[in-house]
Length: 432
Image (tube, rainbow, N blue to C red; front, side):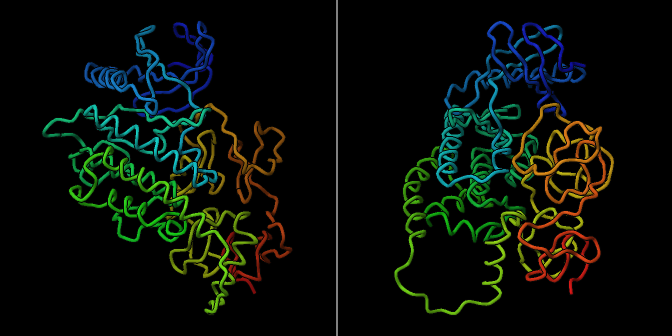
C-alpha cells in the first residue's frame, strides 16, 4: 500500500488526492524535473491481465488525443511493480469550482472549451462515456482540460458496452449499454445546464428542467434551444455529435452576452402591474439574507427558498432531515445526503461514524467562518450552522446567529427570522 512520503521511481508522493475503486491518485513531486504532477496508480490487487488491458487502452487513447482541452499523459510505465500514469496537475476540478459563484462569461468560456474537447474526441472516433465536472480540470491559465478516458469506447459501426458511467450524468441509452456520440452530447448538455443554472436536472428529465427559471434570465432563447435539444431523451433528436453541437453553440454564444446585458439595463417605462405581496416578501428576504444563508434550494412543498443545512422548511415546516436536493459540495454524507468535503473525517450536519476514504489533501474554502473549541482539534475550521466539527467530531455548542437579526428560537437558541419565517429551520419548532 503506497502512502504519502514514500518514493516510487523519480516521484516522491506528497498527498493523496483521490481514492477510487480502481486506482489512487497522488500529488507527487517529480524529483528530476522539479515539478508537481498527479500520479494515477491502479490498486495492485486489481492489476490483472484484463485490467491492464483497460489501463493500456486508456494510455493509448490519451496519447492519441492531442488537443489543448484534453489532458495529455506525461508518461505511463511500470515502476517498482506498480503501473504509474503521470498527468499534469491542475488547480482544481470544475466540480470544486462550481461550489463558488461562476460568472456568465466564465461559464460560456468553459462550455466552449468542453465542447471543443469532446468534439475533437468524436473526430478521432472516441466516445468519452463519462463527461462530468469531476473529469474536467482547471489550470492557472484558465484552461479547461477533459480527462479520464478510462471507460471510453472506440466508435465502431455497432457499439456494445456495459452501462459504465456516472449516475446523474449518464444518458438513458448508455445506462442500458448502448453508448454513442449522442450519449456524450447528453452528458455535455447536463454539465452546461448545471454551469448556467446552478442546478443539475434529475431523471425523468421532464421539461421544464430544474433551474429553468434562472436559465431564462441569463440565456438567449437560442442557447436554451441548444441545451434542450442536447438533453432530449430520444438520441435521434439530439445533435449527431459534439462537433455539430459546438457549431450551434458558437453561433448562439455572442447572442447570450447581448441578451444578458440588455435584460440588465433599467427599464424606462414605469411598471403598472401589481406584484403579489408574497413575491415581494421573498424578494426582500433573498436580498437581505439569501447570500448569508445560502438559500439556493427550494422547498418541494411550498417552493420557499431554503439551504441544504436546514432540517425543516422555515416557511411551511416540511421535514428536511434527509436532503432530497442536489448538493453543491463535491461529496455527500450517506446518511443525511448533505454536502461534505473530501478531506472531512465526519459529517458536520448529522451524527454518525466517520468516512472510510478521506483525502489527505487539504481543501480550502471561503465558507469557513468559525473555529472549533476543542483544543486538540487539528484544523478547527467550521462553516456556519454546522452541528459537529468535521475534523474531530466535537458537538458545536455555540448557538449560531444570523447577522442582521436578533431573533432566536425559544427551543434551540439558534438564530431565526420571525419577520419572514413561521418555523425554526434548525429544530422545526413553530415560531410565535
